[in-house]
Length: 258
Ligand SMILES: O=P(O)(O)OC[C@@H](O)[C@@H](O)c1c[nH]c2ccccc12
Image (cartoon, rainbow, N blue to C red; front, side, top):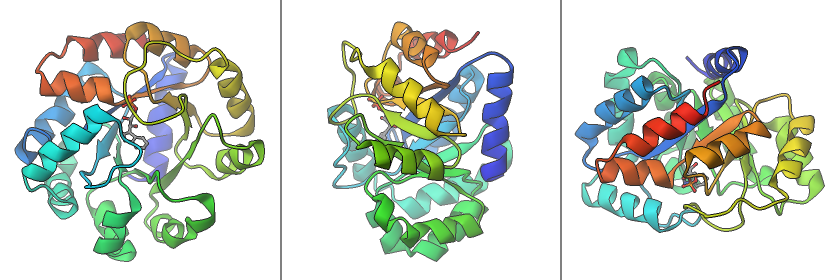
């Protein structure tokens, strides 16, 4: 478990000649009792790891699909502590790494140290915290390092070069390359300059570089993962699970295979 386990899992995928595919789901959407089943479905479908979103009242980086999923989960009364309890209970059943994605506020409310300790107990291997800038990350970085949990940094198309370089150097697990400007959600077209951007990030980082935001079709999975090590897909996965139409999940994961 932890950072080394995440590194190894990704390395195995790449050694196999495949690209990394990380689906995002909102924990508690459809009820928290669905979570182990949803994880199992994605594992069986061939996901490389799972990004698990924590419902939050003010999800500034999220577009409508994920916002609505968050509202449904909050209406179910699902909170961070319950989610970690489910992960603790099902830890030994899981076969792929789990990455939590949460805004900083729920971590603060929980307490940084107890949160990190409980994440470790729950077998959480990595963390994405989109609203914590590089300058502030020491608030959580040490506590996570102590538990051997990867802190995954994000870069945006609009980030100045020096910040991209700093994030690429510091990141653990993978570098999250945001490929659109704006919030999460499906987009029709991929911007032309994206492959140049991904190429440059690959040069800057020793970790795998994954493209995320706006990826929702097998073609986009293929096109983007050609220029880097794989993709993260959120809104389309959340929608497919909610509508109980799993075919798009299988076809996107297939598109990441060699
Ligand atoms: O939904 P999309 O456009 O496929 O984008 C991935 C995304 O959902 C997931 O990684 C994510 C959900 N919420 C976030 C907030 C910040 C960064 C990343 C995320």
